[in-house]
Amino acid sequence: MRSFGARTIAFPLPVFLVGTYDIHNKPDAMVVAWGGICSSDPPSIAISVRPSRQTYKNLIEKQEFTVSIPSVDQMSRADALGIASGVDTDKFIRTGFTPVKADKVDAPYIGECPVVLECRVSHVIEIGTHTQFIGEILDVKIDEKMIDDDGKPSLSKINPLAFDLTRSEYYVPGKVAGKAFSAGEKHLS
Amino acid sequence: MRSFGARTIAFPLPVFLVGTYDIHNKPDAMVVAWGGICSSDPPSIAISVRPSRQTYKNLIEKQEFTVSIPSVDQMSRADALGIASGVDTDKFIRTGFTPVKADKVDAPYIGECPVVLECRVSHVIEIGTHTQFIGEILDVKIDEKMIDDDGKPSLSKINPLAFDLTRSEYYVPGKVAGKAFSAGEKHLS
Image (tube, rainbow over all chains, first blue to last red):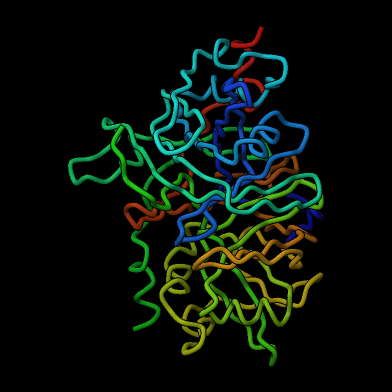
């Protein structure tokens, strides 16, 4: 094993597009790779944001946000959100993304994305450079075209982006490798 | 968009194997899909665990843990850790996984996994069914065979598992879709 030191290396990392309104209801969105589900009940998701970001200010003011999960089809536009600053740029005009008012929270989601979570802040934790916002998930919405006949979301249709930090690359899901809570039975029987 | 209600749906979800010792230094490991990086500096990772788990008791006692990231080659053994209870089963004997004492923390990692993080608990947050443990990452270790000639970890060699909760399936990375902080430039110039 080669030591890489104290680094933020992990696989997979998500590409979450976090949507918020400012106090004047101007929509903002940023890319968050520091995050993940953090509780089953209440269903909750954690996202970490630097205090310098417009999203941070909006989260403190509004206490509500969305997470839009981009498909590979939205890659270049999602990446643009990661490059641009919300303070200086109207990211929605530049990218052509459509901010849509969420149903359950006072925050915009990205209309083009296949999966959307509507969240209300429940905890705020300061951790060095980043502040972690835990949000209770009030609803998940999935594009009808991304749902299979069995009523479940289709991973291959959604084709969600993941982020390889070590190479600064986005990648998509490959093949299904096996069934969870099943593939391991042979080691236990 | 079809509403799925208040659910823990997100893509991608990780497959983190969390290693701990109990007070008698017996190694334990469990599968955690509720987690992710949560700060750049100090580099930190969050994992969420139910209080009923042996891992929870060990985390409270020892305040140190490892995260081993399994390759597809370890899928069935990783899945067995997700099925078995640490209280009743010697998971290491059953799966053939090797608990290796970490260098920087008092916790075991799984010797067969390609990527290992050594972590010390910095925050403990109770969130409903789960308690979130934030750990400062003290070191990351990567199997020499998984490192490319340029010194960076190889996503295709590591072939890390991801978890599709909605279908209870594991999957591996597919093709690289584009460069981060670059693919979006065309929308901003």
